[in-house]
Amino acid sequence: MLLGPSGCGKSTLLNAVAGLLDITGGQVWIGGKNVTWEEPKDRGIGMVFQSYALYPRMSVEGNLSFGLKMAKVPKDEIARRIKAAAELLHIEPLMKRRPFELSGGQRQRVAIGRALVRQTNVFLFDEPHSNLDAALRTTLRVELKRLHRELGNSTMIYVTHDQIEALTLADRIAVMHGGLIQQLDAPRNIYHKPANRFVAGFVGSPSMNFFTGQFSANGGEPSFEVTGMRQSLNGYEFKGTPQPGQPVTLGIRPEHVQLRPNGGTAHAATADLIEPMGAETLVWTKVAGEPFSVRLDGDASLSAGDDLELGFPVDRLSLFDSESGVRL
Image 1: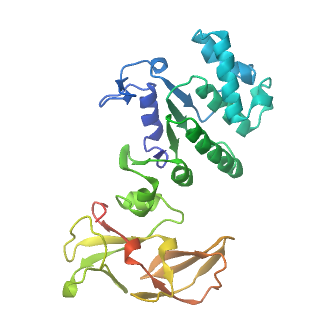
Image 2 (image 1 turned 45 degrees about the vertical axis):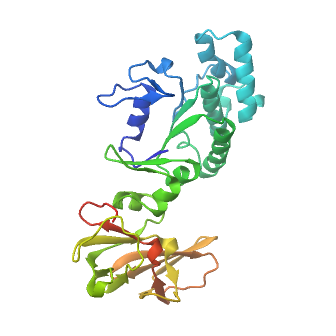
Image 3 (image 1 turned 45 degrees about the horizontal axis):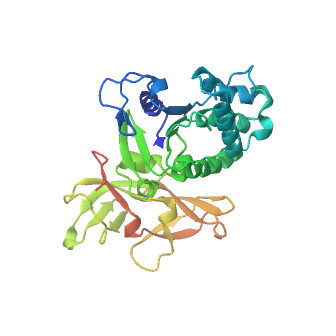
């Protein structure tokens, strides 16, 4: 998955891989072959666009077969590939319909099918679910993950700004910002061990809670300090070596905050706003003067104005250099 905000370079990178843009540096390798200067049609890729790009006057069958006919694939081979793709995507009853007779989800399946019939090993998806409603996106997300498993060794590169889509679908995520890849890693590491402040703040909803203060080592115990709060960092897995007095940013995700902790430092707060969301409850408050969110179970019994005692487990904390944003 290529994940990031609008304008960060996701689609540009995808189009460079596809050969739709000339690149000024680096190389593109597919299956052990340098395809940097190959035409798009010679790269062995299938691409699914955000707009579906179906031919409106052709039936579903015509849309699936058009590219193969242009490539002069034998008729019986075209029929075999179309049948296999239709069965895999469950679009057999739609073969005689035209695009205007299809729902958004059905058009999406046809667009994917058109890529599948090329029998390539690399598929490129440019935000294909962005035009669909939330329920349909969830359904097709599950189907796409199942499709990837059934295709075996095929590679899929998928552009999205939807972090849930990225976390649920990906084997690896490249988080992008300002034309640069900030972190390329497994979804679990992206979420729990973000490489920098941008990744930490972009991935997760609500966003990670942050405090800006300084690193302290008074008495030999590493800690984070800011006006109104001190948090021990004893047991934290440091990637760098912060110096006493160094400006640092401390982060913790809402679901990792403990309510009424049994041990460690407890931070006093007052519930300001409660958002019941069925399976979970979001509590909004302030800690050390900063807006702060806590995610609890849906059956949590709290009301606005309730006093809170919050604990921050050290193994759930993230520490960043305030100047560079890099994880410490």
